[in-house]
Length: 358
Image (tube, rainbow, N blue to C red):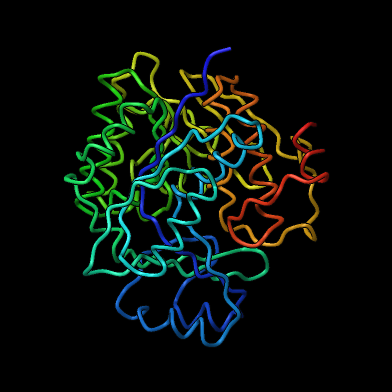
């Protein structure tokens, strides 16, 4: 049996500040559920206010880091050892220390750039009726630089890794976009696997972000997104002939690619079938019974469900599993995470083990 492939993630490390809130809080922040935005000046004071007025949980997060932690959780359960690492930028503060300790506990090798002039990034996770709104304050995360990427320790991890995963969020700052481009260049030359994520509708809406995403996808093997992100991409690309998500998925797989096999698009749709499009072929994978069958009462928090799906998928890419197995493990991971608060990886006890074995 071939060795497990090492996974490297690059993204914006953020400490999630998660709270169950009322509609009035969403209105006060000026946000809607099932969306993610970057914090503006008007939001800065609201993070402390949220912690002062609501019970909150602090969880190591950020979209890419969530996926890497979930992938490692499943690989650890499968007794594959530590197979993952993560690069990003944090502040020299307590939040950064907690995040670094969490990664080490999870079996993920932390390769953080650390700065004095910015605090560790945070993300307000406002949860209502099991749905969530994310407001990211990047802070130190957007200070990441190519100097750190080119350091000996990071380059050793890059050289040893065969799978790279990046959410779309780092494309919003110079160091992030430059690092994504450098990873894609390395992976293309070494014929390694690149996975990217659209991550949020606004990535598609802002022309420079969209352009950087499309450039990265030229070397990517997989692009992940949910149905709302797919719809926004179709709108911005003026794909007027795409009248439903299935057609959008097929169109995404036709995006310009420098890879011989082209691009594979993976579109999740919540409880509806997951779509995978590649080379003009569309495959639908049902969610119910594959492996979870959940009632509304089972849902605690959908924050991190999409990230967890990617983590499950990556864990099986790392062991050379087929597409159906990758999707099933993605569904298992997402279904597990939404039964818990935040993107937390619970011990795989009897309930979870039964679903995992289904």
